[in-house]
Length: 98
Image (cartoon, rainbow, N blue to C red; front, side, top):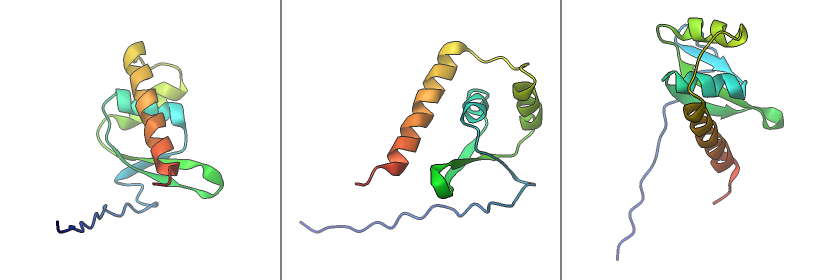
């Protein structure tokens, strides 16, 4: 049986492209953005174990962010719980050594 080697290359997301991406290290804000169907492009590790969540900057994201910080955004509780669980799983998988 022949082994196949597949190279997996992910696009490199710059950490300073504020025109096209929104960067945050706030976990709950990231979960809220996922519930509102914004695209999480990447999760990058910072020194000290913190993560940077990188979202595609699309129409309406600013209003949701403002709503989050002013406690004026609505998400469905079960959808939030599921998105939170899934994001935690992704973070755990990033630290797992296979």
